[in-house]
Image (cartoon, rainbow, N blue to C red; front, top):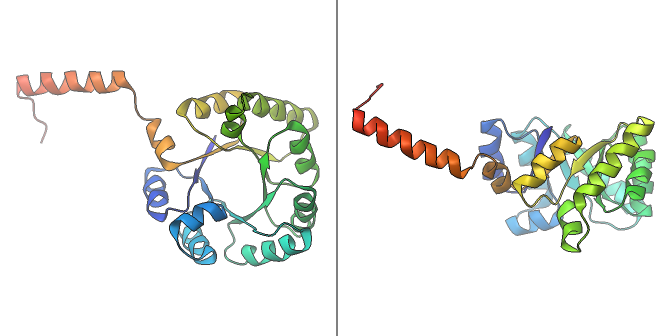
Length: 217
């Protein structure tokens, strides 16, 4: 499974990239707005920092402007993935831009039907939002499983990019289902290393080592 970091925080991306936990990055206008920086400038800096795909989202709602914005974003760097909303206009733009050879991340997916349309439109990635479905008492993981089944049934190459990840359990559950990628905030990815029994065991080791006066260096 690939790990994408869902942020526009360059320092957070750099930290996870150095640890080997950053296979790519997803951004959106809301995340970049929080940084207070220019969208093109931030996207270029992130693309220079990581080798993997960097999703950069259009801000238009009509297909013609989405296509124009997508082409401009694609010129930033070779690893830019154009991020489009799952609307009919977004799917039209996906068809055109993917036909030109651009990689596309279709976002804001909340149903298996939407995911099927995105695959037929040539999406490189489909981004189903787990947490937002959980918020309205629908199990977001069921959607990941449904999409996995449909894509496997017909051999679609579109990768399932599980988004709106809220917990470490979301990540392990997506891995068990067979999602190709997860995108999560840096703090959630780092929290995967945490376990109360690890902390307890380490505290015991430290106590024993101090009592025995053991040193290596």
